[in-house]
Length: 112
Image: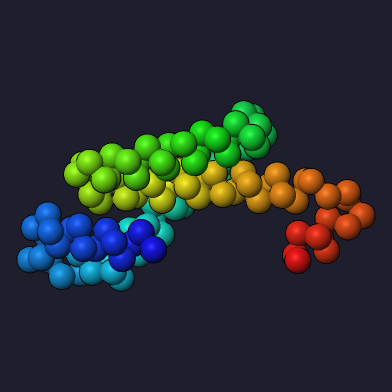
């Protein structure tokens, strides 16, 4: 996914002197660390701003981060922003998906 592509961009940017920083494992670590604030923010905001607005905002900001990344912005910062924003959008989508079924079958429907 994006974490392996970002490793290539980091090498092209000149981070080859730091092999862990520009490796797929290193960028996956940064992605995972960046996802934590996105998950916390989505947990705090999902009831305040609503699931649909959080979904739209999170995935729109993730798209903006990806666009800025394609325009040769600061690679690691934009990749981490993409991770944090997209995880908040996907968390909101999980809430919407689960709530689209009646309570009696919600667990079964969401697990399928």
